[in-house]
Amino acid sequence: MALPVAHVATAIGFTKTRDLRVVGLLALVAISPDFDFFLVWCLDLSIALYHRTFSHSILFALSVAVLYRLLLPGYQHRFSAGLVLLALLSHSLVDMICTADAADHGVMLFWPFSEIRLGWPLVVPLYARFSESPFSAQGAFRFTMLEIVLAPIYWGSAAVLGAPLRKFRFFQPSSQDEVGQ
Image 1 (tube, rainbow, N blue to C red):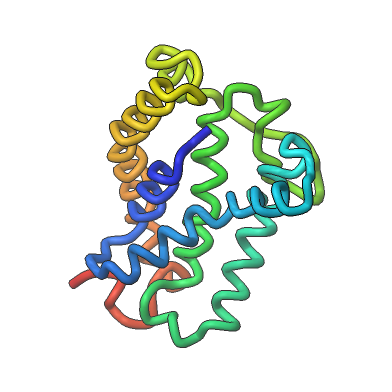
Image 2 (spheres, rainbow, N blue to C red):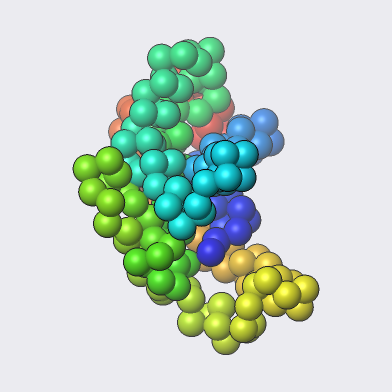
């Protein structure tokens, strides 16, 4: 289970901006797939059946990026639809590497075409080493501290992966604001 700090750090790694408004908007985009929790809570749905499904899929990320491009053209000078796409896809990837049991809590990356849940528990051994459960006060504190320690790694990985992508027009804003000249 990844915390918002991991999702935000990863998404911000894809850009070189120094504009705090862009960082704030990108942070909202990066954590937005977890808004499916509101559906679970408001409609009293099973978290196991509905969390990390449609909102964590490639189709959702593509749809939101296209809608952003079509409905908010005034924001294209801040950051591109490609950056929206990367932020949403990185959310799913971070959740996948932080998932202990892919069968129960994995990401349905290919929803609606497949209901297979994917997950690679790369970070889970670190969680287990620092705390038995993130649901106790001490466990939550340790879990949060571990996420803060890992955040620069997530950010750096995204910066390295994002550098070649920034050369493509789809991943560039319509001005140089995102580049942070």
